Length: 105
Image (cartoon, rainbow, N blue to C red; front, side):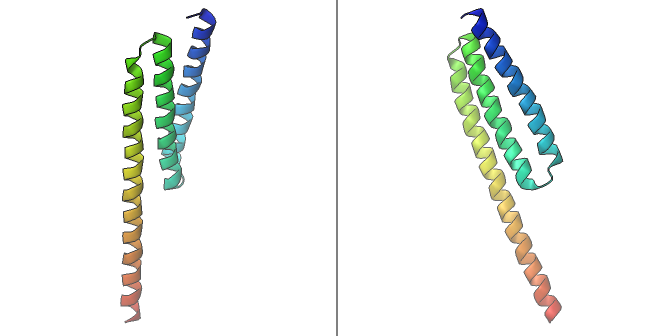
């Protein structure tokens, strides 16, 4: 691999790492829960890209398998978090409806 390509890959990993740090701040601050979920999804995507770049940089094919497994786990985690939030939100709506019915009586 040429030195120019190695430099480009190093810069790409550095930029992705800075992006992960910025998105992590968004995941912590919020303000809404959807912002946090999107930030977690973006962190997973950027990490997968970094693993793939690292695979090309080190010339190791097995890191692509690691990236695929990481991507699947990241996707599954986001789906489960969305499902839990949806159930929680629906439960809150039912709770508020019951309170309104009790207040009318």
